[in-house]
Length: 102
Figure 1 (cartoon, rainbow, N blue to C red):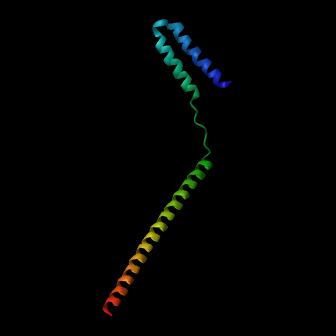
Figure 2: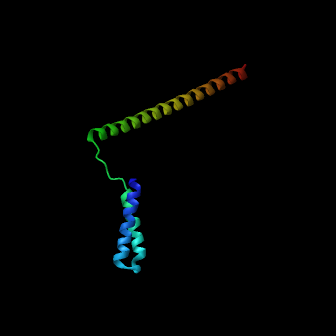
């Protein structure tokens, strides 16, 4: 119902412009009606409670911190796995050298 009233109001504004200024202003009347229609559907800025805003900001900061900690742990695990792989390779090389010396 509200949508229909907004459309009717925008059409009324356009028709009024056309009626007052004549047929030469028909494109401007259409643009004006479109702009009024667009402006009527724009959602106004709502009040934000500072407490809720701070809580939201804290949640975002906590989420970023968790992601950073997880990324750091994954980096350390990759580093440890790489080190273990190098150590295992060294052990295999040492065993191979021992076998070849026998």
